[in-house]
Image (tube, rainbow over all chains, first blue to last red; front, side):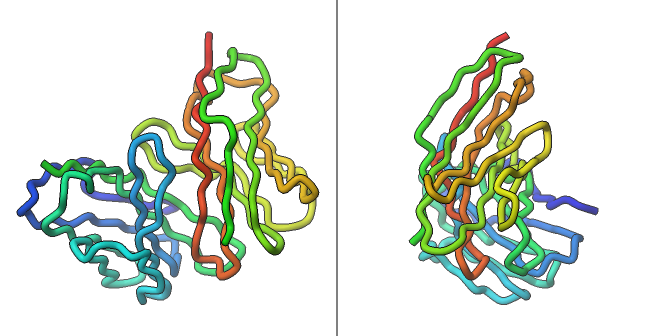
Length: 113
Length: 113
């Protein structure tokens, strides 16, 4: 299995809802990432997990809460989002050492009403 | 801090013609460079990468890139484009710790029949 999967593909939520995005990889990678991508912009890094520990938080608002239950799974819990949080949320993984690239999932298209 | 500049926001090319996408980076040490492609509404797919060694790098889908340290450039080329090459292309540089990618602003490629 050489892919990163993300569910759901699309999500519409209200500002008072709580929802979660899920990301899974079975490549044995030890680093996993969340990115946010607005239309016509490059991906922006949000969080990095390395060996199941949060290693980077790019000053993301607390309404986004990441979780890494095990080395294959990465969640992003969403609560009290704002309409400007609407974006494509991309998950990626990498083997964890310096000489390897990141593999990206297809993304979750999030719309906040 | 590292940075990446893609000077061309849009490029239109005729099918069968050659394509060159420009990428300039700023990085203090030997850079780890990547080119990714993103089709509309999709995740990012790695085209090729440069870590060291031969400065001409071959990638997937007939793409190649040349690393020129003197010009701080890593331009992507394809001799003959296909309609399926219409997409957004991102150049990226990795930090020394190996856990952050910095993306350029992207170049949107349109292919005319």
